Length: 242
Image (tube, rainbow, N blue to C red; front, side):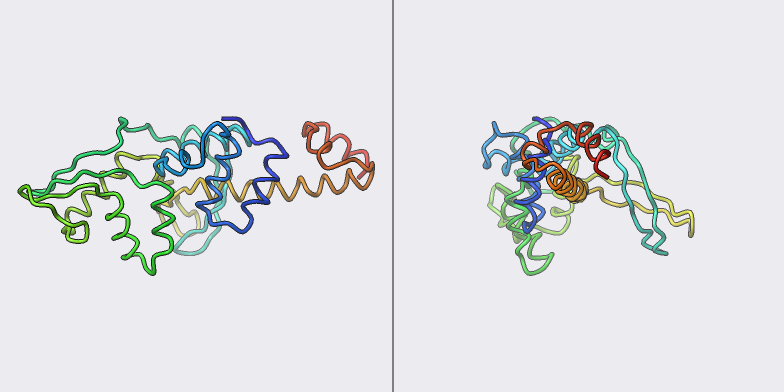
């Protein structure tokens, strides 16, 4: 995996502008991992995909990140910082499928990937999305040797299945702890590397385009030449013309 260059960054931003976050995630990885086919990237588990995005973010923007969150109780704005290393979850033992027993019910399942989330995203409501994920990810279910349809799984089996998926793919659900200094409310929030990385990328793209405009206007240089400069050299020239 290679970091995104200035030119890569603008190309990814342009391609992903009007795309769904799931497509943006795969576009980011496709630019950084040209040796992997699109199907291979789409077939990564959600946690596997997010672990790679976290690494790409670190290699592109550095080992620390800063963000903003609102308190769900009083809407107070909180800034936060974190090390990328602290957001990495230890990977669970590998495997393409796993077994789960809930009472007399036996299940074999796999982890959701980007294709599964894409299919669930177009469902009319969350309940339909959950049913679709169960149908796609439960490879076999039986009770006393008799097959059981995914739609017929009892609530306790679905709860156990969801818990097992989290345990087998821990990077897919990273929770951050927050405490509001204004109202003293404590809560956890899901850290979404896709939306976080994309927000940073969009801000950097906006800045890069401004730098290209200023230097092209001042010197008549081509975009490709300006983007090929190191950030330090671009800043030096910008300091000369502003």
